[in-house]
Image (cartoon, rainbow over all chains, first blue to last red; front, side):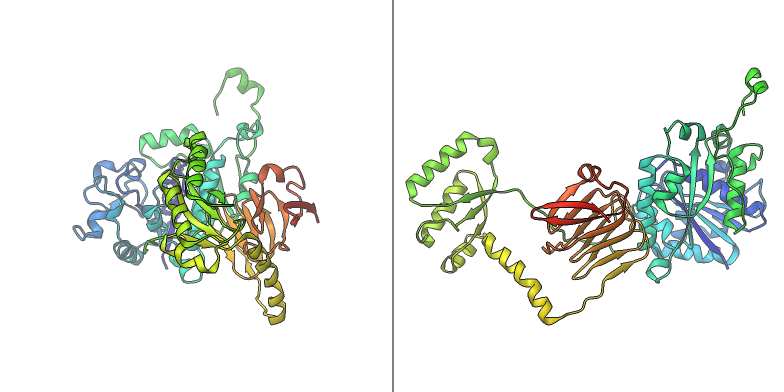
Length: 270
Length: 231
């Protein structure tokens, strides 16, 4: 039975695509056959983060319009076995997606894949609604600041009211993923804490990804940050994947780390 | 996803109200012109409600037509007449204006309503919401109380004709007694609302912060002001 997971947020620039790439890669690393779909038609980014931008020939919109077969459009990831990418079209806009077309593609993918990760565009308009409509589960990506939390709240409301699950009387399983978390700035009261965000959104916490240079580096290199297992962000994403699979994992990187005397003396960077 | 073509909402429009005491063609026009010339910007294309409740004597249909014509000539937009006598109703309609009830008759109507409810002993079950009400969502319990068992987020709106009970934090807007029930109350376990309204009277967040902020509290109407007290 295949599972459709949407990665969404409402607000832009909070780390949806980074998260989609990391979670999809993480699931594939755990042996699940996984496909990640870029729903951000016109602002295609996932292929860059996944490092396969030069291998895009056909895209999601071509498949919907039956100009290419699914197998022609799917890109096999070179690093992680069992991971495929369905890129968005860069030359079209979000109106190119039709509900029937998306449903057909998802049904076809469900025959082959155990996990289908949908990377939602920002906003709450048609593109974002299309990405979440067929979802079984949702990962809501939030930064620890008020406008991002407010937008996540809004998108949670849409998940409850405008998804197929909700129309059938069920509900989409919700997960909260807090990204760009900086314990030092939380301690200085410049950022909302995990507890604040959990209190406002009241959604189970899937993980907290610390703000890290490794994320930017990974994006620029086109390798999902979860592959950088020396980095805190990479480890935090690995934990998140474990929790997504129903395993218990302690939340890490929530506290300000004490820098040792020697490290401070040598000016070492974490 | 069929897009909805429209949404019905209630709103309060600011309009100029003209209490008409007496009417003679020339004097009315002259006085109105002087008034408008004193503040042309304010009166420019302003919506106007004509209140006839304080008129001395009986206003004739042709006089009403002249009043409205004068107002229009001077740039006002008469949109409704208040306290219209029965024989003027058709004239008001011909002029393309709405007829509003006089203020005091409306108040008596509202007072009369609860009595008839009791006589009918009609039972309306309360609406119970178990999930959080998220930003941008609106829940309306028509003709009943509203019970919310989770949070009402900032930017969300909950409305009821009766009382509202919130067992999670109340951070959005809560409007009880929206059809005018002044006895309606709002109860919550954690008062952090943006706005609290009962029967159209409301107070905002900054006033709410002064009392029982983030505490269990209830709001009720005393006269024309909303009181917030601890529970």
